Length: 153
Image (cartoon, rainbow, N blue to C red):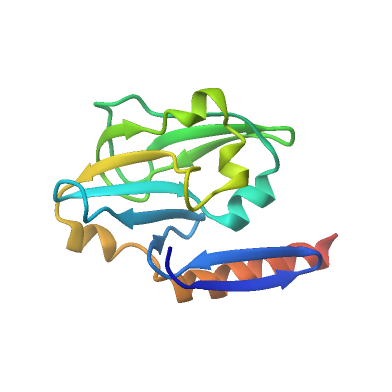
């Protein structure tokens, strides 16, 4: 794994790896160079998964589903709420994490590793990635959200 940016707010530590891009809503996007050209893996960032709570159920859209930016690409249920996860890229779902069905808590345990959500085949990656935040820009936004939330409680 790449280098990590990390911050502690209140009693929680949030990590952001520098090898991927992020949606403003907190989903990460990792270009998979070891697979066919045009594949990205999506998952929940550390802040989003901690903020949402312990994941009791998770699913990605079925393989073959076409998604546009802003379409639901998956969902999680926690003790706090149900959360629809909106795709930060457009393309076709080509893989769903098989661990989600039997061990959805892997999202909390390993959000940047085994806790990924789906793999999407994207076209025009250069255009797609221009809509996403670099790790350092997302880190600043995420840290501010965490600090604002801590002040509100």
